[in-house]
Length: 114
Image (cartoon, rainbow, N blue to C red):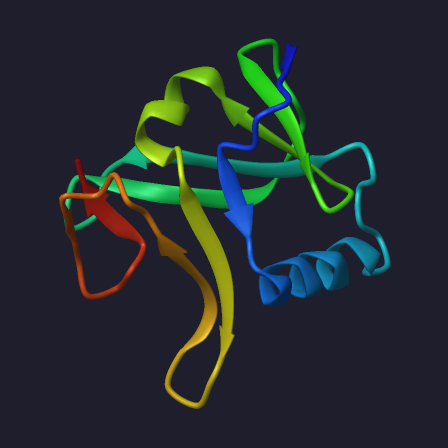
């Protein structure tokens, strides 16, 4: 695993608060870190991954405001500069992704093309 001093993605204050709530829940596996990544599929070709997982030797590790994060090194090309936010509105509740690398996104906001 590679530990990097650059932060490939950012989390807004709202996202940090929500992630900390999830991490403070009873039964949370403290051996897991926040995984940020992509996978094939979705309306526009690729879908974002945001969840808790164990680190692997393919990952780069970074920390955002004390939250340890991991991302497969090969995903940085798709996610560099992305911002993760938390929306808690009447019509939209959940994590949102603002990705400067996306050439197209879909209406659900979790799928993109490069």
